[in-house]
Image (cartoon, rainbow, N blue to C red; front, top):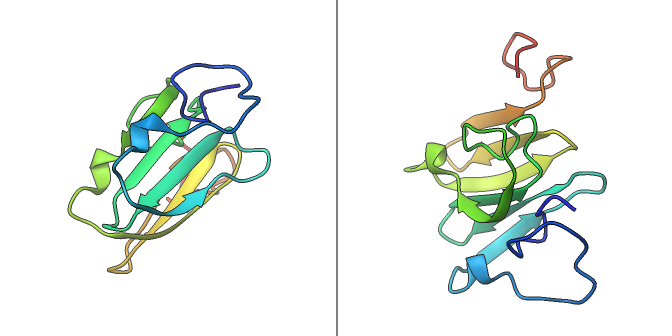
Length: 118
């Protein structure tokens, strides 16, 4: 409903369809958790792509507008993403060098930044 299928549009995707925005990209892991309306794709090279619902900035692009197609998270450039996790409105990224990054909704401090600011 919010672009989390990466098809370039909102609405239900009733049949299996390729994600053209990731064509040619070797994806090794995907996080699309129940209840979350955004999708995270980690490539074999450790890059992170995100798409879908983004009202609280959970996609990591510095915006709060939905992404209807996969978009590279440029703020992690130069780092190798090892794993990702998400909830409805926030995302946590673990990098191979041990760095941990979080983005999105933070009204209860769930981002671990020491505050409650999104």
